[in-house]
Length: 387
Image (cartoon, rainbow, N blue to C red):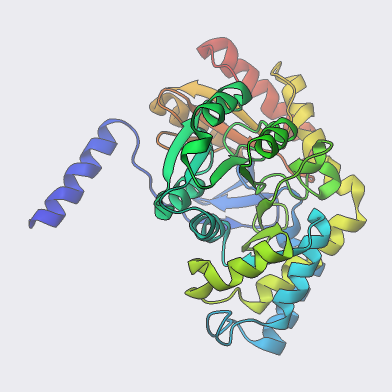
């Protein structure tokens, strides 16, 4: 065994010992709700397809038509030959949804944050990040070369103290947060964060991957609040919109700068036409079906009330287990009952907070939600878990 193999084997052995090794499990998504895994049909509570649009006939038809007309791929970077007209149409639609002047589409949400943050922060600047923000925000900040400081989760007072103490040391300050936190399901206080950033001349970036399509009449978490000013509104096309890709919405000047400076636009192949067409079709559905948009949160609240858990504020409900192996055991118990509820373990979540992360969609049957709640209530009573 050479040194590289020995290094990898040693790391894997350590992960195995702590029940933290991840393995890929082939999963056939039969529709927007049911999956087939290991020869069994399971009702998934682990997919981010909140509106079940990944299998909607109109969305699939739009993707097929785009492949037939324009091919399977974009062919090159958007600045070379990969800027298909469908991308401009999609950007116009996204900006309209978010109430901004313009938008920029990326190949994924991860590429969006790793491209946007270095375009607006550099050595001599400061990036302040909510401690529970998504990994791609941290990655983008690290690529920027700016100083990075985390602030306690949703603690506006702590953030204000940092700005008062250190704002004048830096040329620019960027504050970054999730709009809906992907592992906890709670919302950032975007109204107070917005006001604080304006008062201290800091730029606010909100990652709304899990808010668009399901909160604020489909426009996202920022629209749950009044008088918010978020100059960098990031989101994805892969959750409620049902496809793949990412975007940033903002002013025309901000977006124009991104299209000439963001490395993940300049040096990445453009989004495939089928993905753009599917997203446009999904936006049509979101904008014209208000009852669909409100359904995932209503389903999550049906569950939390039946399971005697705090009221859900988004379609994401965490059931904190604690130790990694205990979370794996809980997930296995639910799988035996016909539910896919994947265990989330460190480092995705903090140590000793391994959990079942439940994601509710518009099409989840109420009877199955109530059956899941009964099982989770039993977990709470026997293991002392708390959401």
